[in-house]
Image 1: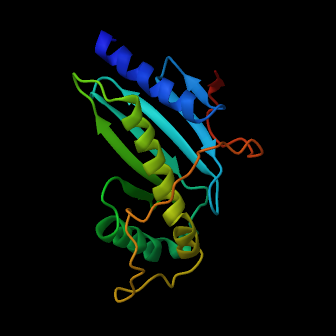
Image 2 (image 1 turned 180 degrees about the vertical axis):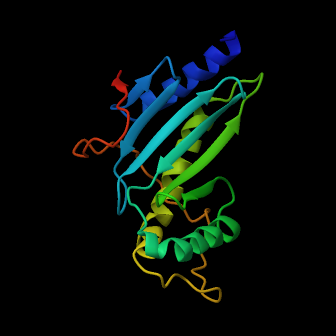
Length: 181
């Protein structure tokens, strides 16, 4: 790992440490994970550092699975949100297993992104997932999603300020558990 890559990774770790006291870290895989209390659902955020690509990625898997019968209509709702209402990032929907993930990447190649910018990006991921989580959950439970003429006049700019205090009562997430720092 180059000196710049190490400094960038250290900045990411420092930003997470300053925002949330409880997080998982895998220094070998260069990954961090934490849960933040959200409205109406908790928000899981994974950050993966990809030095070979000169970027780091934010992933937030939504905590529900779309029933197979509703997946086509739900995919249409994902397309509406991605096209009309997201200025940055995207919701990725896996038609095979019914899972949804918000994804956002930042390129740092041969530069250093400030810790404040990393914190702002974490807040953006959190705000975006909170904003659409309930709408997507409701869409996943019904094949009657928003039709093309319905608008809710919301944009990513309609975010709220959050403290990003972790929810210490949240249950463990599925999948690999990272060690706690």
